[in-house]
Length: 67
Image (cartoon, rainbow, N blue to C red):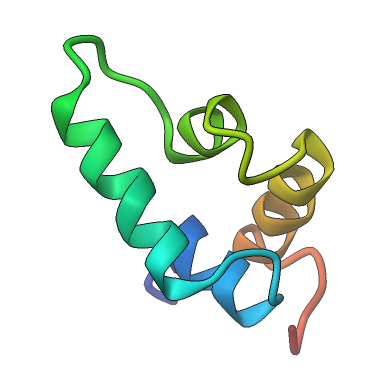
């Protein structure tokens, strides 16, 4: 079984986010008192739309082999 790729890595590969944006989201997630998913945090920060998250999740679930 393949190791599941992280959403942030997929979004960088798809050019939906920069590496520095991913780092900003991860930092914000650590500072928040309530646990929140990466995609939700990025959307709350205005860095992504829900469509980007859906595509990244589809890639993560290997619905688009080779991407």
